[in-house]
Length: 162
Image (cartoon, rainbow, N blue to C red; front, side):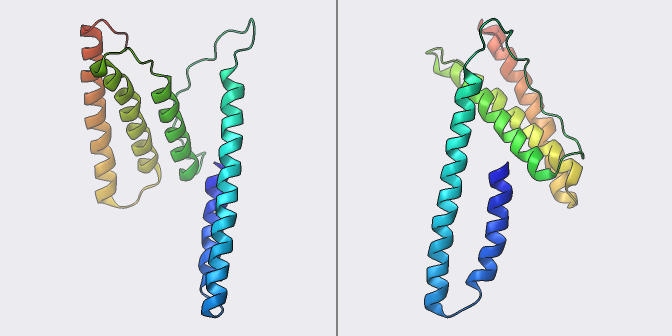
């Protein structure tokens, strides 16, 4: 999340910097900004990997962490909600265990993928203004919920736990 905000701030400054000076200065400024952005992204990625490694290490004797659910709320900015929805979706997709059955594995990963779309659409409904996009978000919620139900039924019928 911190990176998304920082990158947004950098991109706003990038437009100001690139718009001023002569051609060679703009080219050099652009290269410096690209290098700075690469450093910021690499640092954020390393921190993310460190956090994942720490959270993946179970504490001896501690009960497993409760399942995390996405909660759309205007108490958080849109960007934070989207980041949380995507992070949860990616975590749940990566947590799906491979069974060796490609049909099962596909469905096991598509359920959290569809749930991620639902969560992002809920965030849009809190903040979105365009009627067409709001209608699209509502359709995504309806369609993806129906598809999740079908996928969970398939998993149940094929002896897998949803």
